[in-house]
Amino acid sequence: MLLSLVLIWGLGSTVVLGVGNHFVAEAFDRALLDDAHALAAHVRGGQTGGLASPPLQLDLTPREVGLLRFDQSETVWFAVYATDGTFIAGDSHLAPGVVASGSSHAFSHLSQDGREMRRATLQIAGPPSFTVVIAQTTAERTQLLRRLLVYSGLAQLWLLVVLGSWLLRGIERDLHPLGALQDAMDQRDAADLQPLPPALTLQAGTSDVQRLGVALDGLLARVQQSLHAQREFAGNVAHELRTPLAGIRAQAAHALAHNDPAVWRSEIQGIAQAEQRASRTVDQLLALARAAEGGIALTLQPLALHTLVRDVLLRYLPRADALGVDLGAEGLDQAVVVRGNIALVEGILNNLLDNALRYGRGTPPRITVALSTEPGFGVLRVTDNGPGVDAALAQQLQQRWAQGDQGQHLGQGAGLGLAIVARYVQLMEGRLELSAASDAADGSGLAASVWLPLAPTAPAPSNMVHAPP
Image 1 (tube, rainbow, N blue to C red):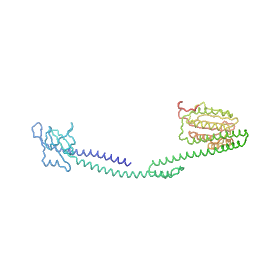
Image 2 (cartoon, rainbow, N blue to C red):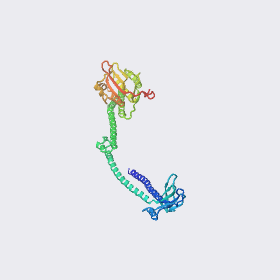
Image 3 (cartoon, rainbow, N blue to C red):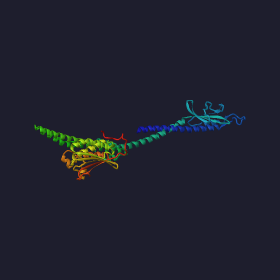
Image 4 (tube, rainbow, N blue to C red):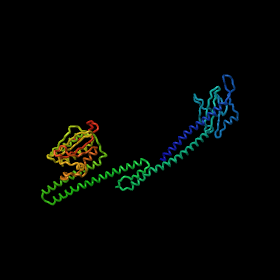
């Protein structure tokens, strides 16, 4: 900053010198031209009216000539010439300058006896016609320019010192919170992700430093949230895998303690089932962790929901047939285009259908996937004829590790499926609702309804996202 100020000071001094030189030269030239006009007023004689008259002469006494030449600090020369170039009076070594056509006077520089001089040439149009030349050394104007440069430079230098001192104090005051912030961050433990003390950012003298403190607080909050999610994921994995691993270990020990192949087969089947439950739990935990971390980079785009639902249902038909479940669909013949993410919508369908196949065991078991539209939303509804849930339990099931009586009785789930669905719906700016199935004869059954925002405009088919075949 100080270097910039010094450069500006040098540039300002140069500009002052250039401007001052122009106006000083203009003032001296005007005075020199005035002296030339005054000298021309004393020229007498010449041809007038075609009649004979005395020749041109300078009507000045020696005393007046001395007064004309007098100057306290400069040397003055003058000369008068006739139109034909004949020398009339003055200093014969002083030659006239060139006057441009259409002008009556001209200024020029010349060197006389090693001294720089400024010359004014004045042409008087007659009758009589003659030329007056007057020249003066430039020591006084040079000295004046030097004084102007010194005084203006000193004044600017004083202003530069004052401005630099003021800026230094201001910058030091404004940067002091940055130093305090640096000291506070250096003294922090790596595990301390609490927001900065409010006094540390509020004492900042500029809004830029305050915004920096706010940005650091936001970064610390995001890092703390990420670490919390990682710790929660690690704790969830350890908690959920402890039971199946203990069961696998106990079944393996029991199988090794017997020589009966039937016991071996039974225990191995139990180990395989426990491994499947543990694997499914890990997959759900990973999905929930990705949902917690994926809100920042999530990309929403127009999605053909009817096509995606049809493809997912086709993949679940073999499993439904094996379980004897009547899996049907409604409303898939109507195009429904929502704004969403294909991976998240597939995750929602997978979890809702998996829950319905596990717990929706009516007589006979029946699951219906319906697709419809409401103002601004596409509605996906998965309905079963199982035992259903009440309103209080419906809200509780959207939390992690929450299970109903049917889930606890079967012992197959971990209470994460609907929590994953709720998080996915939230990321796509939709909503989830769990209610009793309206078409159940006894009022039981569960209807899981997902509202997803419709795409603002119908995109071209080439731009629409479809589910992979």
